[in-house]
Image (cartoon, rainbow, N blue to C red; front, side):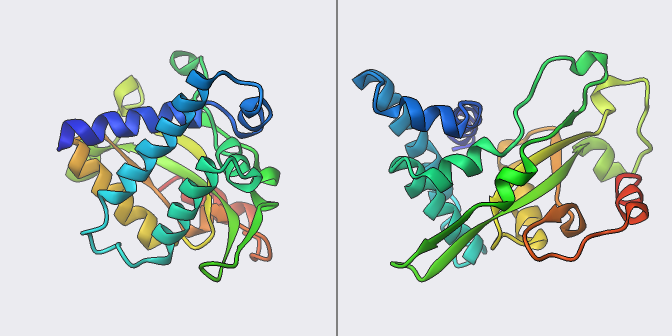
Length: 211
């Protein structure tokens, strides 16, 4: 079970790196084999969400909208591809101190898709997540600035606006436990933004990064 989920997440991560706009533009020109590959990637994400059906999150609006995202990717819908494209991609230079990965804030906040079948409007929500080492998180130890394994990274992700801080952190905790990975993604509502949200002061943002 754990091994299967691990590979699903790996393939999903690779799928995210494809980039939404380029995938949509190439969809009609690509070969049959490449089309099958993209469909399999979306299918792996679908299986990943299925693994949460028996969890306490099964009825949460966040999962419904994530499933709509899966359907949108399978149908090559622009809004879904843009949500993937707006999320950060890991780049080179981590050993040189590049530990902040940002996506496209503006592209994310422009997303607004109406799903009449489920009576849902999926809007983009841009969150900056903080990645911590699980061992130090559990022990409450101070981070060693000279150790690469203790470096905290930040990663920008575009998600459906229905996903709240509590749900996202529960999902992150679920993944950390079931996959037995050494890192944990922290979501803070104050580090998430969407249209019509009140803006934070610079002092508040800085204080959150110093937590």
